[in-house]
Length: 364
Image (cartoon, rainbow, N blue to C red; front, side, top):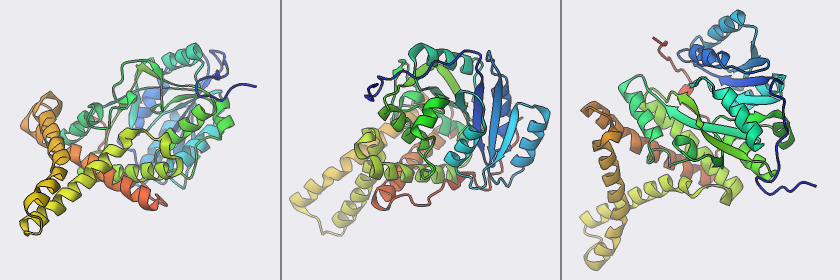
């Protein structure tokens, strides 16, 4: 019997020409879908390929665009995802697919040339169950570019491997992912009760089943972040709340870096309380001095953000730097607030509303 110790089981070997199924959940992506589909269909593989689009109830014309694209290329297959949940759509697309390797793609992203061929070679070379690469965020507007810089920076999203790692090797999770269907079916596909962080949870089950999840920095995917401050805040609050739910469910399986944003938020709230008590004269003398220690992490954070903003990481002009100074705390504090709520009360029916009613501008 094979060991289930993480990394000890080899994923099945698949012939190079066995075929690839690309799966993409889609909701309100009119401004991004066509380019995302084009980069998928341009991927060169030795065998047959298909792209399954799981269509949520879009309100911006995305469904009509998807239908036109499907009508122009027989490799595109449409399935309905009335629930609009990402894991539900992914499972619908996977079940509708025919081939032994599944490539997850996002309608808000673009695969780089050679991505799939390289991923298939890495899967075969290291016998992993799932391989992922680097998320390279980019932007079209000053705000979106500032979000992209935050995504790509070590202080923006906590330094996960797929946000800029350079060393190939076993990983906790994989961005999007190129996966063996047999392993997905063995561990039970995506958990449809998890609306955010479903990829992390799936990779946890893959690793607990004894298979390898692999990071290959030569793989690159372009990701387009949210286009407005309110959408960014809603996205990160929902993501943080679901991370809190995952902590409730899996405890120590979560990385310590996930606890940094909520710790920052707690320190900020305590600093405000202490400041009010000091101004009101309630805290005086040595008690006031001792309580002032809560300011230190907040001051350190402010200095870090300002140093990053003023430096090359903040962009080139004053507008870039102002947006960077606003974006970093928005991401961290929104995520932290969501995380605390998720740990305290669970995620329940929390959804990422940053895509609802989205009116994306068409690509130039």
